[in-house]
Length: 268
Image (cartoon, rainbow, N blue to C red; front, top):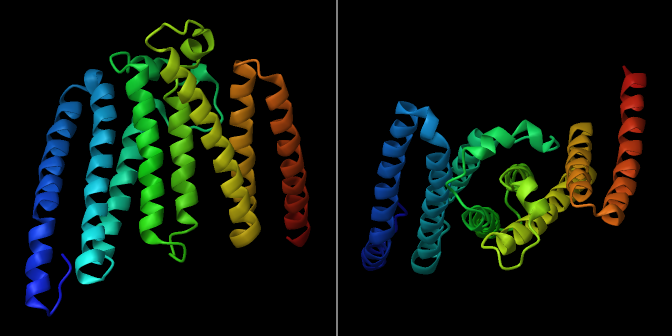
């Protein structure tokens, strides 16, 4: 909790944050109960992990509110609350990775069985969660500001988000969903658009981090890996023009990577 020497402001701040602080404590207790349930019966864990992920995003939003109140009332950024918000989003990602993995460029067959364990969670709920996850990361970045030391760390978080967003999409259903009157038609359609955009954005962010910050071959490789995953999805949906454009970009970046790796070998 933030502190100030102004007793009146401190009292006002404490009163303002009370309900949100209480919400956080309740949600963390609920998390502990659900984790115990997952461990007691792993066969029913997947839907619980899905809703644990959403619960952690709710925890994060409450921490962000605490930070907002601190800035409004005490004119101070709440670094502790921001740290807990970031931790909560990371936990949300981990819970989803425990269901469908965090693999970036993998064929659907590698995680299809795991995804089948989410049969009770419909397409609309899945799309809602990936949107909420993307929004939570965006709000977290805004709260930290442009000059934060975490700027480039968020590239990894957004990359994990892109991977689980793609892996939560039932590609077989999305590929065959052509009935606009179907309950799943719109969420599958929008989820596929969203996943492709996130993969494209993740590739660009890793490439930017390579160009502007790290010059690390690993970042360049990761950028290419996201492009490869994006091209794979375009091919699944028979979007050959888009797939070809992604391939051109992939080939250009791969050429740079090969060149840099050769330079590294020569230096050694």
